[in-house]
Length: 212
Image (cartoon, rainbow, N blue to C red; front, side, top):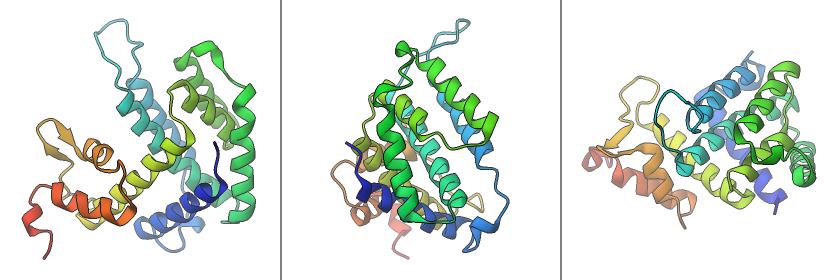
């Protein structure tokens, strides 16, 4: 079920993250959010088993994380478009994501759903929350799960910035079979925002130095 309070919290967190990574006046920057969206959407397509020329496996966990990455940029584009009018924007997102209950089902064709979302986004440079919700439905990611993973990825993005992501010193591959996204995915279950950040500090390579 769509929760307006959770939408509002995500909007505020996204604004805070953009202020941290871009600057306080980030909405005045000419940022191509649609370009970021199609780049992340291409990464989502790479997670789908459609390539006939090679063997591949589909990981629902990876798909969910790519959807969360797209969601970050959709929120950023919407905040910029509505000049951070969070009351109006919360209602827009709430209403559009409810509309998809009877729209855009695509007969279970996940690739077509992803492609159509991208096509309409690039064609009119609009923000299609209803089409995005249809993709969430296809990949069995409900709103509460989206919220939980968004909170987790938001904390991870903050953690990255605090640990050298911009200057290239951040370590993304934490263990031979686990990167930071996977660590976050595991750690965010039943964790609140502060607990998750502290958990990531413990898991991060060289954690013994994190208290300095």
